[in-house]
Length: 137
Image 1 (cartoon, rainbow, N blue to C red):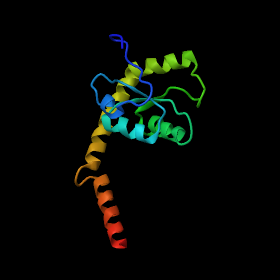
Image 2 (tube, helix red, strand yellow; image 1 turned 30 degrees about the vertical axis):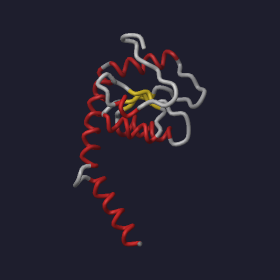
Image 3 (cartoon, rainbow, N blue to C red; image 1 turned 90 degrees about the horizontal axis):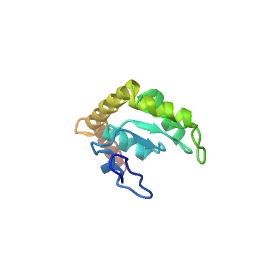
Image 4 (cartoon, rainbow, N blue to C red; image 1 turned 60 degrees about the horizontal axis):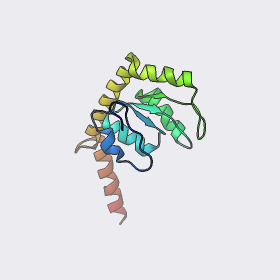
């Protein structure tokens, strides 16, 4: 890694730890559900680059509904982004639009943290599921 130039990791990487690092500003993601959840929990906005299957739906959710991502490329596997289009996307990410998304990502992370704490909605849903399973046994 060159100073100030970033880093590309091939193969497995400690994604959760990397996303939680203070130096991470944006996350280029294929929009797989686990990656989406990890980025949301870390409060990191995303450059959505879906490749296949549910990733396109996840990207749409992130961009249009949650407003914590911009679409980096409209293609799929093997489709390279248009250089001019990608430059515009990156300009948005570092501009006012990107700052708003970063703020929204931090807010969404706080909401997610509240949901999994005792008394939160996800915590309660898991308790309900466990109770239903116990009743079946």
